Image 1 (spheres, helix red, strand yellow):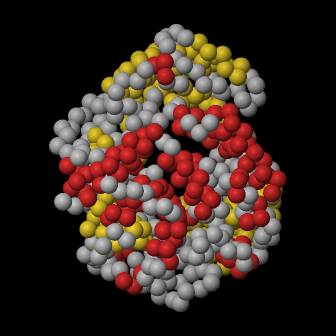
Image 2 (cartoon, rainbow, N blue to C red):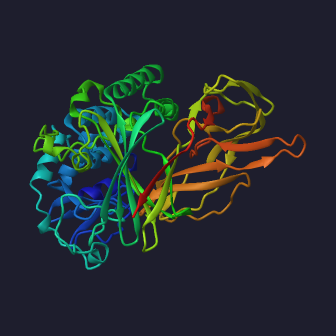
Image 3 (cartoon, helix red, strand yellow):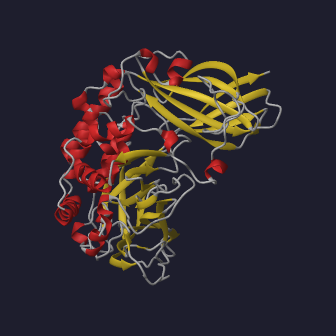
Length: 523
């Protein structure tokens, strides 16, 4: 029997570790001659075995980075899984330094939901964890020869051969494109916004439209303040998943780099259609004290360089991110690059106006528990200290929400529901706290199509199938009081939840900064 047959015979489910062995779907970048071992349930990522070696295949990666080796054999892959506490860290290792990797590994191994599966896996196959998984993964990556992999014919329909030689700096209308890059028009317009220094760096005239590069600067004090706030929140709330949303909201206001501005561009007074964008960040290595590394949920977007052989970031100045080098930005500061693309007519000259809008900020009040309809809570808006009255209009401790299976997955169906109003009316929501149950793989599950009238169902997942589910409430007017009543649901579970263990997070939303418009012209 193979190791997978043994696991199936002993009914050991690897889904708590992030692996779904029932899914054998193949993709355009799945190597020819390989055997699909398991899917991760996120973005089509899956593991395959080819000539003994186990590879991670990631269809959402950029061309040339779809596949990388992770283990010399199936047994080594499972030992690596045991050493990392789950699949997540195997995939994330490529962008982590050793200290960060080990911190995350300790956290994964301490999770109760992982321990039982890891123990059962080791007993069933008489396996022990790999001693140094980080070094093992780096060695696999270092010895990899991409030319040894052959892809199916459809691979070349997704990945076009480059039409021009590679350039040190080239900007295209869509990331990952090839052909003729956009023509750069340097702008270098400086402005202050959201308590940060910004620059509109350059415009790129492409066949389909125009691309803008903006940069926002952060100093070391802002970086240290973020890390200190992160530590404070961990001390107060711990690393519990129940308080993850609360921690993230309270920490968001201290982010050193602001990467979430909405952008609208007009040409000669006519708005251009947005066509998406990307963002990346850089912090000087000298800022990164190892003991201050943030946790997985708040890992800073550090893009310093390609990894050296030992998995650490090199010190050479020429290893700075390409955008820092190209725009000659001061590398002693942190920088965020925001790139936005806009569809534009063939003639791309005239007067341009770029309008930036901040995302609405969210801050939580203290968590509450709901026991029955008619309850009232006095809440203080954390933005301005103003008092608000939250009224629970209705409350159902256990509501059944049927969701049809998808791709052999069944979903949790139990949730508590509440209808509420807030006075005076303001931008507000009551969010559920704590993790729900993840979908499970199960064959021959009958579909059921019931649906509650006060909710809509959202299913999150990658190209290979759903991995999580959430229920969002609808809003309606109270016929008697004319108050706006919103509905909210706790996170879904397979078994009815105990209302005494469900906490709700009152969240106030506020727009803290005005829009800003920057004008420039291209002749």
